[in-house]
Amino acid sequence: MRFLRSVCILLALCGLAAGPALAHPCGNPVDCGGITTPQPFSSTGDLPEGLELLPLALMGAIRVKDTGLAATKFRTRASAAAPDYARGVEQAAGEWETQTAASEANYEQAVTESIGRKAFGRGVRGSGGKYAKNAKELGTQRYPQGIANAEGAYAAGVGPYLDTIKGLQLPPRRPKGQNMERANIVAAALRAKKTGS
Image (tube, rainbow, N blue to C red; front, side, top):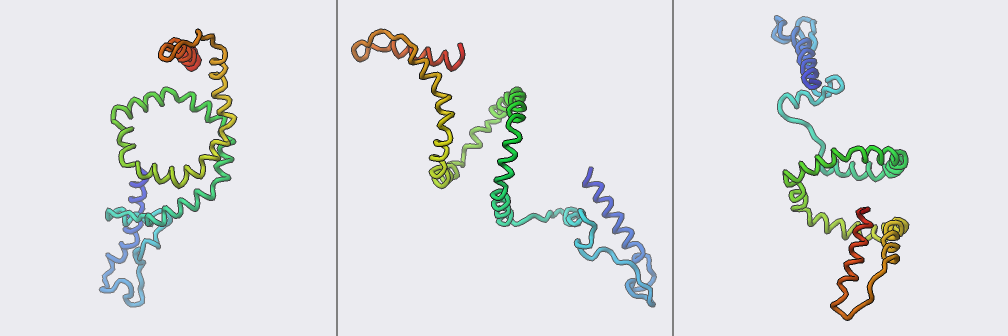
């Protein structure tokens, strides 16, 4: 609707500018006995702001930035936005948790739909090169930092399971190949801890 309104405005402006020239009796409507007539827009630069691309759009062409320039702009602008990113994360943490928890039904619906159209497999195919490149160039640098940052989370996550194992009473160890009961007790206890059952 917005595009249609802009097109109508452009056509009206062109009609108003070209009308006197088309109706003029002289062979040269620009200069006829000292009488000058208004000229149509000479270039897209003369159009009102926001309408520069309309002539191209009317002819079926849309002016787009060069891909290389767009990629460079993305890199420079996004790299400089790290402080904004940090502030945004700090301010949105509580809201993110609340809103994300409330969107569980949307998540379930989206996952079900993506399974139906095989989106997972299509997204993976052809991405091996990108995965290897990013893992080698970025992952090897960031892995140690990520591990150091995750120490507290690791302790908080693994602690309850280690405590569960510590509290188990296992039957005596038997000869090799006859200790499946011990393994089953550990597996059942850890599964119960994970599922809360």
